[in-house]
Image (tube, rainbow, N blue to C red; front, side, top):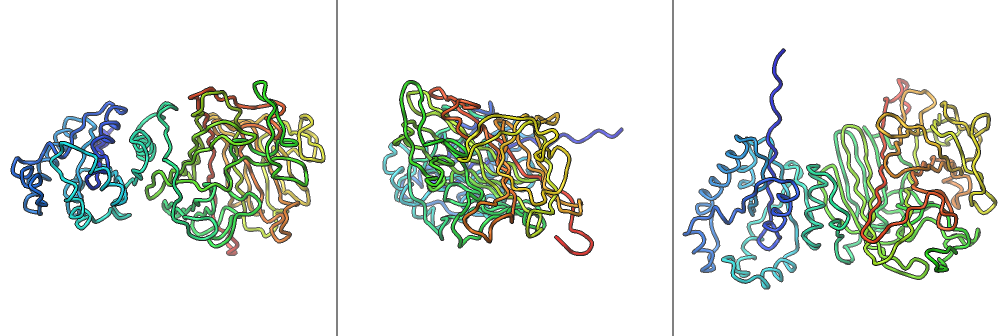
Length: 504
């Protein structure tokens, strides 16, 4: 049998203007990966160093041997099968082409910062041969990486440990970092566009997804032009929880009152008609862009102590497209000095384009469902077998109204439980898989939505770490010790194709 060629040796090229933290971030990456690393400054000739120290910018003639020396070192590491990290400002596209072309294992990491931020950093840096006055010349030369260069772009107005953690995650090179190293970006209000703020787009093959600044919500997801979510437009507000992240609890807390570690706490009633606090505290908070590439985005925010929840959490969400579909990771870390109660969920509405969901085929691999009272709070559990709630075998939803939490999930060998929504033809649909941290799933057909035109248009399939009222009952509740973290993973996998008659 023919011998398969060995995969190319991974090389990470860290680029950005002076002051963006290339050296520090490269060192952190190399330490966490156990790889060697070199800084581009080490490859400068004495003449180049003297020229820059005198306040004169380098030109292309000066940089040519410098780039050649960096490339030669990358080739040496690749030839020895040693993965490596190297920094270089690589301001121009032609410079990056020289360093990336012919090196199939090389990945581009671009550290992005504003001129104001980087100028302040350089002004505070002493003993370096690059003076702050040359920063303007670097920005004049800078040609930011384009999508065809497949860069991973990380914002640098956050601690270096957070920059490195975001880069490692999107480069998909390392195991998860310890919770204490997951440091979010400092508070800042990003530029706003429309009612949900910034729109961050992901693409992979025929797939497209959009994540928004407001609440870090998933606004849109499609495959080959077919929408898989009943989401919302860029110029529309979020309604009915569509795509929202539910932190630090999903669903409801009865009366907004609970007791934790000997303290009686009271949350604002965000569902006053039922006297409940609902869906957490971060739905209407701006989330920060931490890092992005063409097919992935990482956003984060801080949940500060407040009435009813006097705990400090750092939270981020990562959305990634690949050949298998959309994968979502939501992580929270207790950054405070005391234990914190915690739960998490997300609220996407799935659609198979049937107008109403009545004819859609639903499969829910769950053995039990939670019974509830008139306030939507759990009163117990019962087996689904022999009841109208048994969707373990695919069947039409029909006129059945669902606002039901299921548990006792049946999982595949990968540890995933898969909820399937299929077109009546059975030829296409979406599988929503429930991975790490998902012990419950809420299915909601939207019969009670405030907007009549939205009712039963999509099926909310909500991954949850705990059921409603967990803060009061303790059922499924996660208690985060100081420094501890929690991860929730779920995703969407489209399957099938359009029907021959053109229905989609």
